[in-house]
Length: 264
Image 1: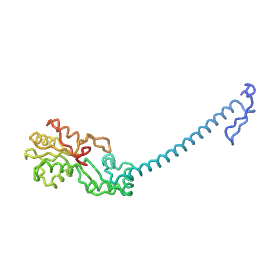
Image 2: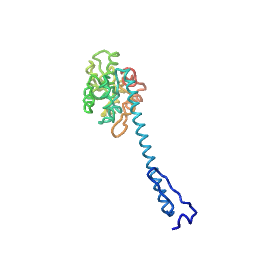
Image 3: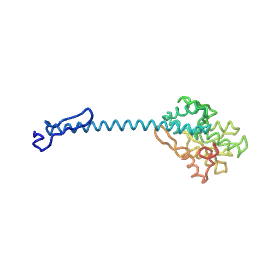
Image 4: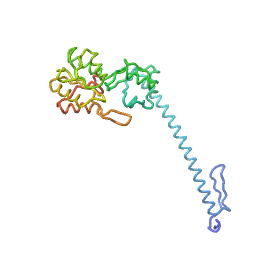
């Protein structure tokens, strides 16, 4: 192995840090390369530590800033209206961060209402699901598009009128509790059709709704959401079922749920 002097390299001292000094007078080229490689690793490690510390400081400052912003925002409001599907839960699991956020707002004295376009279940059932995640909620705090649809019905047809319901048990209960007669067939001459989502809605249900609407029944849909978030992914929502009926009858329903103003 040639020596440094043979290569015309003058002896030098590498001052890498206050605690690392390497004299090259008697080092071979092989040794010098090893020292340089070690120096590169040390500098890289030091740079990584600086970046990590800077990132930690940035995250802390950002978090503190978010708290300040949150305090400023919620100082002006008394009520939060929170969506459910895709916001507080997805399928049967709570979304990360949703429950502690709701709890923090309730601790601050902010009232929380839960607004959902899913009319297939009763508000009490939804409140029980929220409680299972650790969210303090009651049925009175759940605002359902099914209930809004029934309120719209009450302004259009008299109590006791026949209503063909396409949807789940929750929607049927809303309609019956409002004093209307729930029917399933167009042959019963319903005055209105109320359409909401339920996993077991069938072609026959959609066909009966189409027949009734074509014969003059008022048509109200709880929502027109195209998609429904599920644990496995995104599934077709009530809007796809409404679109099927629309294709058959050539008209559009009045929408009760979000984002239309009726639910608010």
